[in-house]
Structure formats: C-alpha cells, structure tokens
Image (tube, rainbow, N blue to C red; front, side):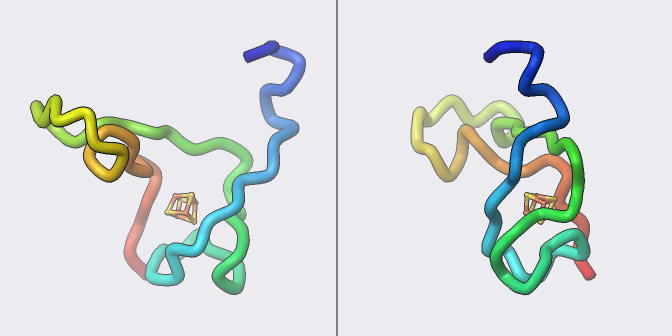
Length: 57
Ligand code: SF4
C-alpha cells in the first residue's frame, strides 16, 4: 500500500457489538489493526483476518 493512503481510508464495518461501530456501516477509528487469531494458521479468512481493535460496547 502507498504510504500516502495512511490515515485516508474509510473502514466499512458491520460489527454492531463494537464500541467503535457507527450505525452498522462504518468504523469510527482512523486506524485499526487486523490480526490473525493466535497460533491458528488455518488459512481461513475468518481466522486469519480479525479486527484487533475491537472493543465490546
Ligand atoms: S474497531 Fe474493528 S470491529 Fe470495531 S468498528 Fe472498527 S473495524 Fe469494526
């Protein structure tokens, strides 16, 4: 990714249980961390690309 895009992206998200979610459509944060689950290595998207910035409401 071009560094010129840092801080300029819109993060679409439908995780309404997260305190940073905006009406089931967007993330209010300027930056999130996407992380794999610990020691999974399954190659499945749901395991390999979790939102590490999630916080329950
Ligand atoms: S922190 Fe992660 S889970 Fe929460 S609204 Fe933002 S992208 Fe969605």
